[in-house]
Length: 422
Image (tube, rainbow, N blue to C red; front, side, top):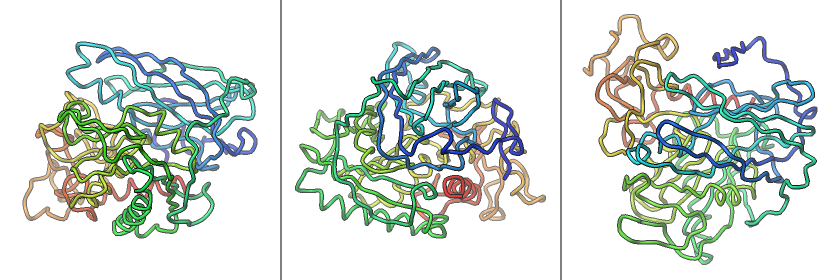
């Protein structure tokens, strides 16, 4: 497989074969930290380390190969200085930095990264992208796995159940459903919703072709009250994960800043991806790459939103639509290539999907019937009309049709499935 160059300039043929059992135990070390800053500054500080009982990730592909996301974490064996684990990801903080509020104040966000539990001392390094999309090291932290301050108690233990079991977690994509705003008397509804959304999932390509590569879990974690919060309407409910509409003052953006509660509940099952189902009929959802995804459970657009948001959370797919209904400002720099696999500024189109475009298709590509079902570079995407291009006229990342990922998005999803399961 071809490996994208990262800031470490590691070629695919140079990646060492890391033996999981040599460096790690079959459980998780959770690193909770605070991410603080404003639109131009940021810094990290450690909150706590937590031992969790399951490792749901790959034991083969321990080094990230995609170079997506806003951030990167790398883990080095302290004795040898060998790179033994890395992942790219994004968080709410990176989105907040592009809002108007970030220009006038600073905020702290609690964030989490998980790594396989190390056998020996390790050094963990945190990287953020600058405006040129280059990774810059911001923080490092040394961890001794024998440190007795690594917390072993778990504050939110609940029963988990399997919605779909396809095999061993280490070579499957494990998705855990978390209930939000389901009371104790509504847990059976949550279980029914889990089955319903799994059925939605496997109506879409390329998931349907890869059904045997997925496990789905659910956690029986009730809230005190039904629903979620609507700050713009003055409505607040006592729910377990503290989700809310009006995230960054965008009404339909349904997210949570309570990452600790999300991870506490998710730890009841092995997982690669977290999906929060919110017990509401209001239209809304959201997702962040390698962090979590959110969807309402009872709306006529629930299937489309569910599949669309998973595209964000799992494969770092960007929104391909154009809208003013977001709080982001200058989310994409037009003089560099976006890191998302399904957007381009044409600055370096060769690094994107140019190889999937017919030689007689013009770039940029006009929005005419001649190119309705062809890959090209169609202007408009990433929330803006000009300067950003998407692969095809229509796609699940642009439209309200669930089973319509374009060829570029399908490939990005398939590559990610293979990464977790090979």
